[in-house]
Length: 399
Image (cartoon, rainbow, N blue to C red):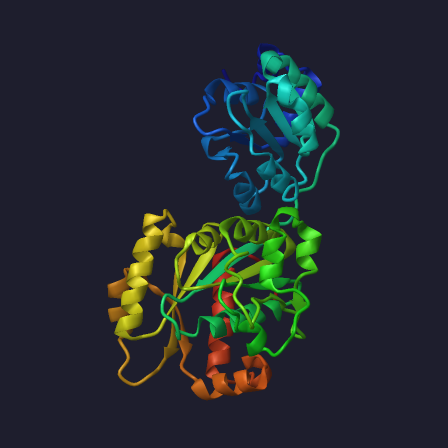
């Protein structure tokens, strides 16, 4: 059947009234379908498609992955499919409501309808009356509209070897993004260890990372935004406590919640990660659009980076998201660029010049490299890195 030539036939077949079908077909509404793992979705998807909605296999995700998927790309309608035998993750649903302004519909047994509405579901459809219920729910939602929330980019910065300068790269790379017009940038020091950022730029924040992590269950967009310290360059910083670690509060659920909300809060969210690849770091990388892998041009650093790369591959993180950044470039006796690329099996995305004099001066004074000197090679390298990655991720950034 030709869908474009016979819209009314589709409407009659699936009992969708003509006005509702016309509205949703003309808008080509994209549906994100969240389900319990192992659910049989074929017939259910057919009902959605018959209602004139778009729902591809890529638009079907588990409840656990729903917030991550919404953080990366919005939908026009979110549909939850559950059943009496499976426990629906209402926490994930509540997270989803903070990430989208699209209506959320649930389909399942009427026994959990009240729980669904309390979690923020706009419409609940009895699975035993799917076609008629879907028709009525779509008809009610057709006049509500909705505007998608903005979707920023999340970038992780990690150095497998200590002393590779990842904090310097992350801080000044983020500052380069923040210095551009019409762009908001947040830098989060995702570290269970005592922090470095607050010392590097000499500030005393009102909120530390550990404190924000401790209240992750009740964390919303507004409370996250007010937890950041605003640097004079415009960069928003959430730093780890410089006096103590936050290992007790730092866990994957908190990392996930902060990263997901940060994507909505900022055009750019930079996550400075520890080199240890625990669950928390892996979770942050899964949520990232790109990962800057910072290495020094020496054998120990490259070998450690090889181990990191193998671990990320094992965890299912696509190599296409990795960007190899060689820091401290220009030292005597360093490895050649071809040696690094051959060993890593990755092209070098960017070089950052070795400039210990400027780095030490900026740290000693508690200022950014660009505040110390706008003409240094290392400053130009980091600005170019920000510009290149912005272009590659197709995120418009005005000079």
